[in-house]
Amino acid sequence: MAQDAAAASYTASERAMVLAKENLLIDTHIDVPYRLNNKWDDVSEATEGGDFDYPRAVAGGLNVPFMSIYIPAQLEQTPGASKQLAHQLIDSMEALAWRAPEKFAMAYTVDDVLKQYDQGQISLALGMENGSPIEGDMANLKEFYERGIRYITLSHSLSNHIADSSYDIRRQWNGLSPFGKELVVEMNNIGIMVDISHVSDEAFWQTIEISKAPVIASHSSLRRYTPGFERNMSDDMIKALGENGGVIMINFGSSFVTQSANRWRDMLNQQIEKVNEKYGEESEEAKQRVAALRADNPFPYATLEQVLDHIDYVVDLVGIDHVGIGSDYDGVGDSLPVGLKDVSSYPNLIQGLLDRGYSEADIKQILNENILRVWREVEAYAKNN
Image (cartoon, rainbow, N blue to C red; front, side, top):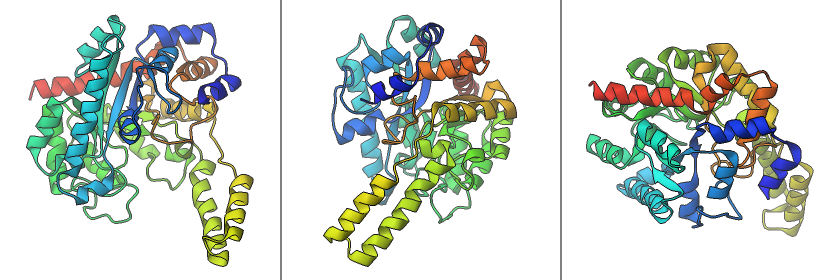
C-alpha cells in the first residue's frame, strides 16, 4: 500500500508524532467526495484504495479535511448539472457524518472546528472546487453557504461564467467576468473564502484588488520550481497574497512540486503520439512500443524534501504567516511525493520541518493557525457587513 511506501522511506520521531496528534491539523483540499461519487467506499473504516480514510487520518493527526466539492468544468455546458452534482456531493459528506457521528462532524465555523476537536471528532469542512454551480445567480451562493460551503475556487480547468482558468488558452474575460467581480464582493459579504487556485493570472490580480477580506490558494504551489506552469503562483502573486493577509496552501502533487514531473506527461505523450502515428494506434507493434516507453520512462515522483522547499520559499519570501497545507489527496492520482503518499504521512512533513529548524510555534502556524486566522477574518468581515 501507499502508506507502506511512505513509511519505508521516512520515519517520524516521537516529537513529530506528538505535534501531529496534539495540534489541530487542517488540510484545505482533499478530493474524497468526487472519489466516492465515482466508486463508493466506506471511508469511516480502512479502505484499500484512495489516500484518505478514518484510520489513516487518525494516524496522521488530520483533524480538519476540507472536503472538495469538485465539479468538472464540462458540466457547465448543461444547465443545472453543476448545481445538481454539488448538492449530491454535499449530501454524501453529510451522510458520512450521519453514519459515523463518533468519528466525523460537519463544520461550518471556526468555533465548530474547535468544539469538534475537543470532542475527538474529525471536522468535515467544505470547499467548492469550481464555481460553476453558482450558475450566475447570487441566490445559489446563499444556498451553498447555508449548505456549508466555506470557500469557492472560482474556476477549474476551463474558463467559466465567473473567471478565466490558468489551464484554458481562451481568455474570454481577461480575468474575472462582470458577474465574477460581483461574486467576489458577495462572497466577502456572506462569509465564503475566495480561492484563487486554478484561475488565470489576470483573474488573480483582479480578485486581490476587489476582495476586502483575505483570499486563499487552497491547493497551489510555486512557479519558482515549475517555470511556465501558470497553475502555480509567481513570486509577485505570493507577495500580493501576503499583503492581502491570505495564505497559500501547498499542493503535494509531484507535477506541482517539480519541473521534471510537470513536464513528464507532455514529453511521454509526444513520444506515444509518434509511435501511434507510425504503427497505427490499435496495432500490436504500437501497443508493445508504448508499453516499452512507459516502462523506460517511469513517473519522476517528487520527494518530501522538495515539498519542504516550497514551504521554505514562501516563508523566506513573505513570512511564516502565509503558508499552509492543501495536499490535493485523492485529487492528483498516483503522483504523490515519496514520503507523503496519503493522510497518514503528515508526521513526515512535521519531521521535515523540525529538521529544517522550524519551531513548534512555526509548525502550529503551518498546521492550523494561518488558515484559521483567514477563516476568522472572513467570518468577521461578513458579520460586520
